[in-house]
Length: 463
Image (cartoon, rainbow, N blue to C red; front, side):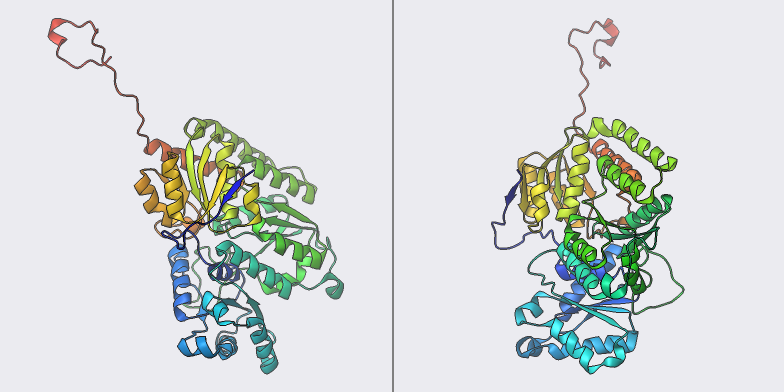
């Protein structure tokens, strides 16, 4: 049984987590012509925007209700209503999400009522979807904010089967795919390729691979997202043959979608490593009614060969991991599959998934906690986001950058982790880090009993 170690200090010394509004914004950015609006001060939105711009290296559409001292005390309902109307008039987005911050939640904002007031006063914008979500940043993390926002978008935009007349399986090749925040745009591109090899048509909800994949566009500027899941697809989810859910954090969203549509659901905690991908491929073969393509069989054999090649470096390796729950579970599963030992596991907040992660204990805390636990247990490698680099340097260990944000490397958002190919590359990356930081070479031994001619007696021996 995994022991969950609660926080035991009043502040974060070296923060691990990104906030719920950041997660909610990330979910929104996966829809076409969308605009997240944070209900809080301008500084709240500015910090979130900095995270996104440094991670994706792209312009990010993000708005703020710009609460000031007066509205924080007297109420900021007008900020929300006017903000929605201004965005709708100027940018004409398909979707606006209203995401609360700690300031708005402490002030007592009711953004759901604000949306109803906007609807009543501005019927000319009925074609603009507006979804309000409570995402206070004093609790939860990017993972929980992403999941909560996706749940509310499904609640608002997916019609009930009885009312819409949708029929599961009517679109025989469509598969709905709910994807966790931990899947990168590169992961989604690879996942689309896997589905298409089974002659299936995946509808990703949301789809960051189409909106934040680093693609140049013809437009010099767009005030809303370009690419992503079109809102028109949300009305078709009830016609799909199956729903595939990747990430334990999306269980509530998956339950709601199944309740609304009646489409059968296949659930996966992650797609890291051999066993997890075997489960996905078996499910896709069942859904499609097709045998596994030879190309995928070959990729599986390549992963098995990589496991043989790298087990000398990764077996019994002592690893420290700092990540949100979904990603923590995925990374733990993959390194344990190689015989490595996770000696420090730190996450940002408590979730039901933690009790199922097979490690001795998980600390809910920050990167300082990870550093102290890793040092006490002689960790040899660290896995974490860019904020963990300083901790790894102080520990004298290599670091595999993973998670959000990744701001000190180029293309981190595009790295592929999932599938047989992504898992194979992760093993190579881990093994190379171990090789390049090895400090345990066996010193050259020179025997005092070596027999040498007199003229070589003072020369160093090669034996």
